Image (cartoon, rainbow, N blue to C red; front, top):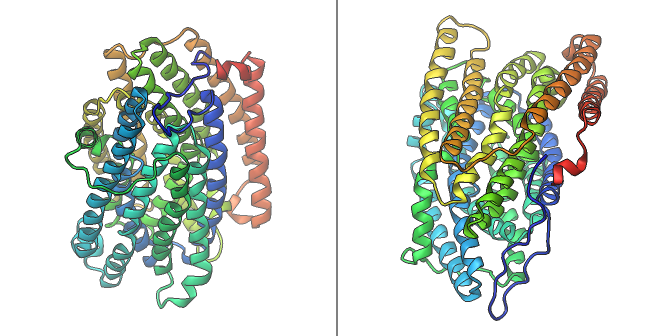
Length: 538
């Protein structure tokens, strides 16, 4: 596999400048980020398992999903989405100039501007909660209990946006200095706080599900508190000077505007699904949400990790006018994304019911809920490789401070998603077919494929991506290895039979066996076909 070698991060000069990060390879940085993310995902599985068993697919759980998803979409704009994609290239450009004073001033002004904007947005969100609930959950307007819960929870979760946005700003600075571990591990705190909220807060509420909303807010505050001191060690702890007139802040704002759609297209598509699901049977919101949680596991472990690591590298290559290094780094990231994304999507498809039964089934979450969540997981898993590719393809544009091209792709993708959602879901809903939410999930997965194809096409059209030799052999290896993995996993699944009918411990052991055997078959086949660990590094 062709790819960039070790990189030396850009240095900042000047009196009291932070020391530049040591020479660190992209694969090593990605591995560190993935390892920390794995801890978060394990905690996330524990959180989801407890959450599904305590609340099931109830009206209260559907209300929380809606109240959480709306500020979470805005988080993709003001936190790790649009803001990060626009902020990091400008930050790295200033670092390349070597002026520490200018760098500190930029961070101060950017922090002040971001805080001011998100504070206002959060306040509007709390005041306009009834209007927002009616817009994004039209099916709940005629259900006073559900609608009231959505409004109450929105007023709790909206302030979370302020704290998580500031946390993302801190994380972006740390990532730019090659410090990936701490930002990657902070989501563990989010999941642990949510678990604590369910265990200790929920029994103290008349409506226990409200504890989930409070857990979200507390988790956002704690994540910021944990990351904040790390900026002081870099000499970049911001003093919050609103800098709307600062030229570099204005550049970030200008770059952000087109990314409002493009950097959060997957979340936007989920919001479209949320609107449509609000008119379906109770539980549809929950089934889709829990499916998305499982989809997020490989995306966070591999896709987000690769995208987070590659963005600062690509922006430095672009700032240094190193077109060859830029293209080579992108080629490396795409190969790695496919190497992880294709088996991840296939595994989720093959093990959709076993996964949902192990993680969610029990308590108030029935075997029927398992089958419904597995249905949407199977449909959505088709888009996993594309979702992962998009995590790499989008930063390729943002690193060059080109935010318009991804925006164009995102707009077309949202149109395609709406059209497919209507085409797939409306006939099922009108005919009262059980599992109509599966049409929403299928549209989301196919829209992800369409988005990745558009981004790849634009990169090739502009001559930014020049494939390195060996792509045919790389794709053949993945295809053969996936065939071997499929044979092993299907054999074990056939042996087990009905996963929902056996006890939790048996389900868990058989699932671990299927995952381990499938991964071993995939890895062994890759090795047999000549892939070596050194090929992933350089």
